[in-house]
Length: 315
Image (cartoon, rainbow, N blue to C red; front, side, top):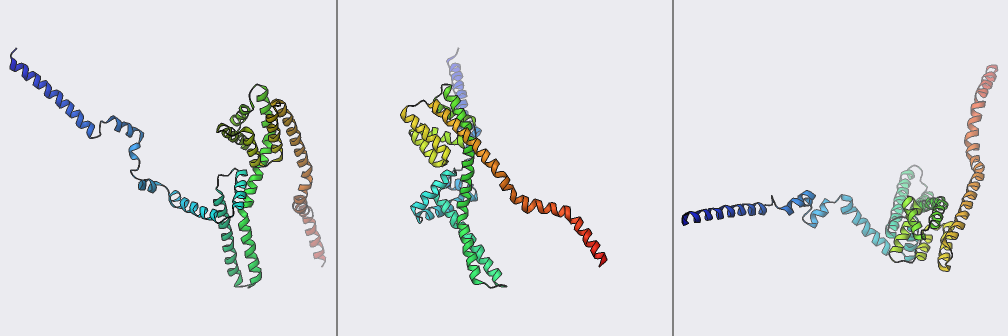
């Protein structure tokens, strides 16, 4: 074969291969065939904002403006509040299982107080046009202000009371499950894990928090003691004290749990009997003031109308 023909074929092959590689390189540079770019497109990561300003503008009005203002005012309120009041607010929030900060709680009390004061002042000016009584108006305004200041505390204590009642209702059944798990061969931590796994109530969530604190390095007796302080229920305090004492003295956990379960069932039965005995006393108020008047009106109303018509006819 002629040398010129061979060189021509080799050159043509080099041109074809080089052109193909150049074409692929241009496709990769324009972003249409880049595998990394395709993967980013498949995950939708190209739609992310390019700057912090775009990220902030993508947030809602509440997250962008209201939350920072409330956080700033909460920090200011916490700075000018005595530490004892902040500790008391933190204790109440923990017992209510609330994630609100003590500073935000103090700010909410101030907000309710100002709102109630504003309502009292407006009512004073509205009513004072027709019945000017400055002394009574000032007293009413002061009373509304005090009620507004105490309203968040009353609402929080109501939540705490409901949570404590839920603990009391769930504690005997939880102890029965703990007894079964411990006597089946599980440890006390694993038994609490079963309660946390099987149930979805405040007591199960409290046990789950204890387990997480133990996993993070806190001693079990300290975690249980902190839980008893957060719950503040006498029966639960007795249960945690018995568990801590058994842990320190090395007593069999199964026997302690069985005794505690028997005591909790007896106390639950006694509470049910007490509420059953209180029912007749509590029903007297609606019975006397609501049911009896309605019955008398239904029974004696037609007779009274007949007597009136009869004597009215003679007159």
